[in-house]
Image (cartoon, rainbow, N blue to C red; front, side, top):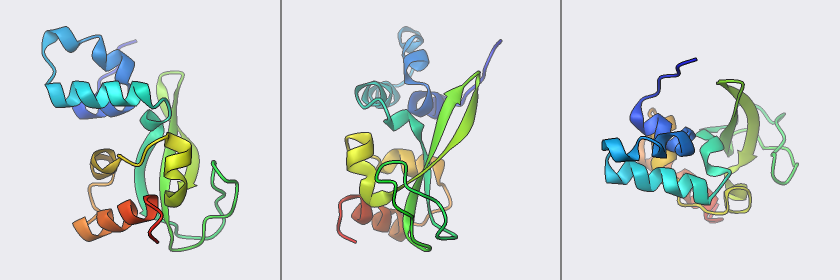
Length: 130
């Protein structure tokens, strides 16, 4: 089966496969993003950020409810040649779950409708400032 990805999507979500084509010339920034995803094994699961529309979802990291209106990060798993929803984590749990909070470019990529002010709010929440 052949799967097609935009280059940034492949670098962010399928880093091992992306790096197999590194010799054929993907840009250095995307290759670095793919290596970062390999170093932080859960980072490729990130699939954007949003405000929780309800207060019913549980965080996959701390298991607590995610309050309505708070920032949450969507998680997906690549299984059987497709991405399957995997739930959410609190933005404040990002460091514990992913092992890093250096996630702004990935969040920007997978949540293109977020304004810069909202991205700053997500970053602040991940850093524990909210």
